[in-house]
Amino acid sequence: MAGSEVRSALTVLVIAAILFIAAPAVIETYTLTVLIIYGMLALSLGLIWGFGGILCFGQAAFFGLGAYTYAIAAINIGESTVPFLLGIAIPFAFAFVLGAMLFYGRLSDVYLGVITLVVTLIFFKFMNSTAGPEYVIGNARLGGFNGIPGFQTLNVPGDPGTYIYDVDYYWFCVVAILIVYALVRWLLASPFGRIAVAIRENEGRAELMGYDVRIRKTVLFAVGGGIAGLSGTLFANWAEIVTPGMFSLAQSAEIIIWCIVGGLGTLIGPVIGAMVLAYLKFLLGQQDIVDNMMLLGLILTLSVLFLPRGIVPSIGLWVSKAMPKRRRKRQRVRRPRAAVEEVPGG
Amino acid sequence: MANILETRNLTMQFGGVTAVDNVDFKLERHELRCLIGPNGAGKSTFFKCLTGQLKPSAGHVFIENEETTGWDPHAVARLGIGIKTQVPSVMDGLSVRENIWLAAYRTHGRERARRFADDAIDRLSLGEIASATVGRLSHGERQRVELGIVISMEPWLILLDEPAAGMTGEEVARMAEIIGELNAEAAIIVVEHDMQFIRSIAKRVTVFNQGRILAEDDVDTVMNDPRVRDVYLGKKV
Image 1 (cartoon, rainbow over the protein chains, first blue to last red):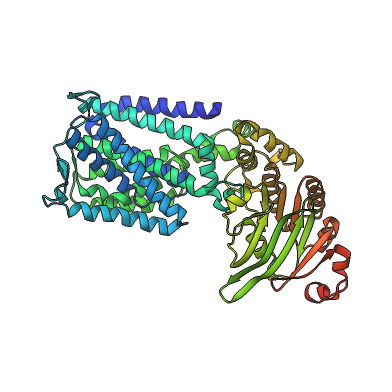
Image 2: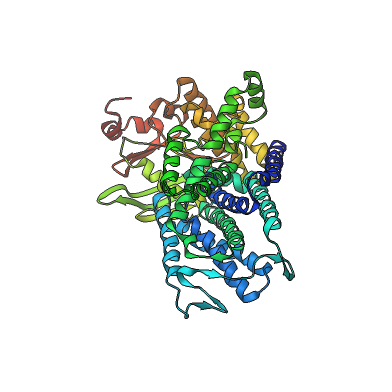
């Protein structure tokens, strides 16, 4: 990572940490925790769509798979450390296999979107139909539309009796999203990340340079799946129940809306988009005059009309316009413009 | 001299249309060959069959005696082949330097990539716009960026599809110079329309017509071939 990128990443991390420390004074930690989890889920799609150009309509599949994997493993194992790791590893592996089939099959654009959406809906349909007693994995009943409740939630590794919950769980999620963000920044700054962006920009040219775009897209897709799986695992521990609703069409669509509203091509954009919209949804859920989803649709429409780049890139643009000309000129000399645009504000 | 590139009965069909028809072609080490022909003659299709961008319907492609028929473009490129496409194929959202560095990185690795990228930038006089976003450059500059991508890979075989298209007179002359310099290190195939440009660089020319090779000889002989004038030039050169 170049010095300027390290500074930029550290700035974002420090500001985020300060906000996370201050936020419990305004919003209760229970709500904040799920906002962070949704932020991480949006980050997973922001990575593969915004930087890899892979529009996955089924990020909810990995989210739900992570949650179900954790719940099933936690019931069977009892202690949360291995289930937690499986909640990341299984969605990663599943995304790797699915991605390999898609990218080695040269599927892209709308076909990729449709197939990933169908995969999610297959999970949704299947999980809804597992109410019978024959749908058991070890000691865990899948439970159909009722889902799986009553599993061991996160505990201190090696000590199943000491749970990480409430405010401690909030801090656990804060640390998790900061670590994930830092790792993703590092990944994007590495040659792998630069090549991923190059593939997004011009897949044909990347191939003519000698890069095998299929394996690189597969790996990026799997990383996105792993992060979505982690957010699903965290969600399972927050909600203490997993249900087929995690695989729903509404869930899939929401993740895409978060990314569009927050701003693609940035990492903090999708996180902010998710947290703002999910909190708005939470507030609106306390009234029954207007339907939640209708309002979300309205916000998306307004956002596309007035902030087509999304919240974060638009703010970046306003700031750069407001900046004195001389300072801008100096910055242009120091850093390539393209690199600045690539990760505006992180 | 040994052939470094050879095609045998190469054929490419799109439905009922035969774009490349049983083409036998040979290129020697350090040779500079121009492919010319009227629009729709099959030059670019032939070119894409060589680079792996199209899978031929029949026939064979050999590069350094290795059969590469049907290989993916990245595998062909990895043999040490630099490819410049008809329409500049660059990463519009990245800077000039990053475009070239990405190519150099694939070939030379992290340690040496920067040096090779800087060399290519200097050679093509791209220093002043090295930090600019490629999408904002003129057509001629984008052509040079793409050539920079090719050069930084240090290929031993270079395939250039219409390298002078859309360039100013000065840029065309500079391009001819650069191709001459590159030919000292690599064999080059140039697909081109600009006859003046071809005269300035070519030693040997292959004329395509209706997917087949119509004539193949030195540039003066080809230009004076009545068959070539009939199908391509329509007048005496």
